Image (cartoon, rainbow, N blue to C red; front, side, top):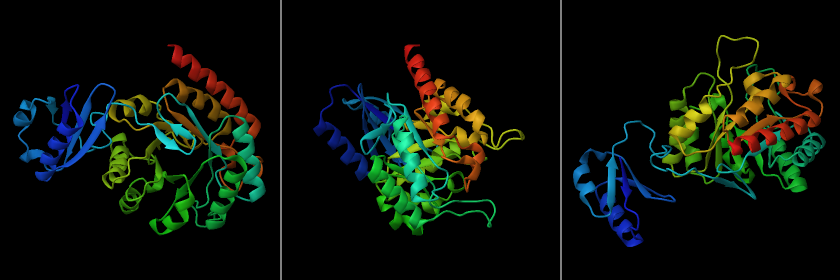
Length: 335
């Protein structure tokens, strides 16, 4: 249930109403937008008399929400959420480029890539320290050493770092990480999501290989229910019957999610296609669809990458992509 307050309602009146609601055993989420203040009622709202609530002088309207995701719902939070990460941000009028290697392989490698992607306009550095691999014999990442290398690259470039967590037991290692990524295979690892909800870190949640948008939003809800509202959603392709690409990029997810939620939505065309030559056109299409940003895999020597070299761009190709995407973003703003 949500209650939209009348324009001009003061802070004392809001506190009085929220105190009364909490006394009824209802959790309250307050969103102050440019036009209205919205109070979201979370919990067993069957005990709340909607007609009584709507009759209050400060309440403009009351609506019941039937979908299970509440905090992530745009009706709870009409204005777009902008996530601050260091000196950069995701959402709103900013188009964010996150780039870097699939796996951190060496200090020289990640440092060189970090400098090149920053020069091309990336504002965050991605890199895998812990790698979920289908085969137990594939490279699993450098783990804690990989995080240390990312931190050194951050010192050299100033770029905030994004890296994937595999297990809640690893959380102490991620205290120094700017954005914790929840990969596609962990999207419904609910115990991990609960632990991340207790942190204040920005959490980037990737859509699972075979998950619906509703399920993605419910994963975000798990984190938000714990008190952490710093969430970025990422569409990275879903598994279909098509075999020419690694996955099928669902670009319709962008406008659909933007209708359903206030959280920023970015696209990962690298994992979606699995083919380097397809990354640029899909990145441009993502920008045209209204995405808030991109996550791109970049490697200085893709042919010898320890992980996902086939989908990784060279620094030169990423620079070309970044310039093309910026032109698309500017064109969309004029429409």
